[in-house]
Amino acid sequence: MNVPMLCQVPYGIYEWESMGEALAVSILDLHGINSFSRPSAKMILHQVSESLSPGKSPEELEKADPKQALKRPDEDSGNFHDFQLWRVMHTMVVARENPNLEAQVLEVFGKGQLLAVAEEMGNWVRLHAPSGCLGGKLNTDLDQVRRPCAYMLIDG
Image (cartoon, rainbow, N blue to C red):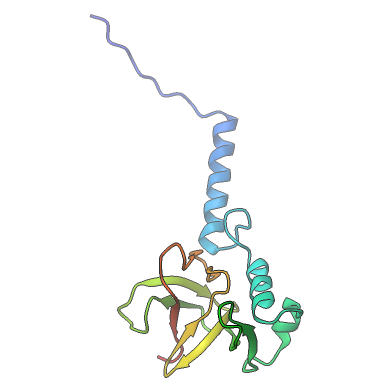
């Protein structure tokens, strides 16, 4: 009786190279800084600045007073809405589908990220995503997850 034997084949240089590349990409994804698989922070900031304040560069917005209201026209009515840019001050904050601590987490933001805030509601804020993308580490697109907006706890 013939029994085929399986023997272990050693990895070659190409296999090890592919494994190293996969690990490097995974680490970049974990920290949200892989510019090839998700929108970069600069790209998101540029989209936000163009949407909220046409004509202003992202650098001008970074230096602006955080409580200064920015104007954005509504596509349907033509009325202007006020928004503010807020910077994350904690190591990590999360955006949820509604203003409730038990609500599903939609996005995670790291310290130093800028967020577009549409409305303050007590200890919560309603975030605004001009292109549908919140711009955090999870790369959540509100249109794809079928959520109208996201909320973030600011005190508590």
